[in-house]
Image (cartoon, rainbow, N blue to C red; front, side, top):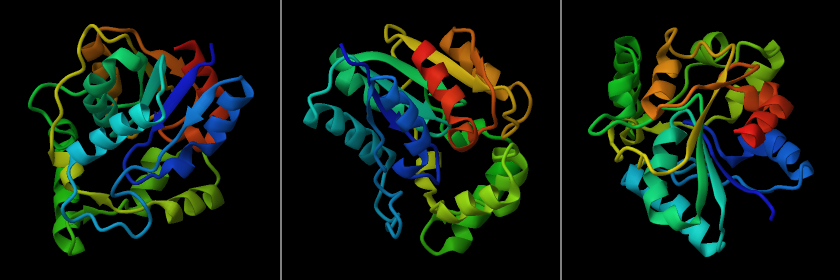
Length: 233
């Protein structure tokens, strides 16, 4: 049976960000869907969007495509999306894989999980945006998210990012059902959050992390290694 992956991006990304990894997975014989989520298309208006719209979109995609034995992969903020979509498609799931991702806890949003300096920054950027969105500052992208890329790659990828609806950070989803098989993949060079933070999310799942080379943006810098980790997970 062909392995089917649905790859869910982190904040600020579109499905385009998965292309190098998707090519690796397809070369290994897998079927891969990498959608751009509502609110994250270039030019999307974030007003009126909710996290429930995004989780419902992913669940609807799985159902419309009549997918079975699906591995949902959630990156970073996409951990909320994967966990939120999982109950609606439980009978179609093989596993949920969290890659350097937030693992939801009851009543806690991504905003609740990040350090105070990120909370303050996100709030300020959303208030200044005029449409309640958060743009990724280049300095944070360069120094914390994609540390293992050349400067031209950092600038190119940053130029493709879109503002993230702030409410996607402040709304919550229920925790993943413990009966759903889950794995955690973690980049060995990921410094996007303080030391130990990503490991704490793996512990929340109750699984040891599968370590793979690369930064928080290894989808661009180490796609073959990341695809191999997803296959192993």
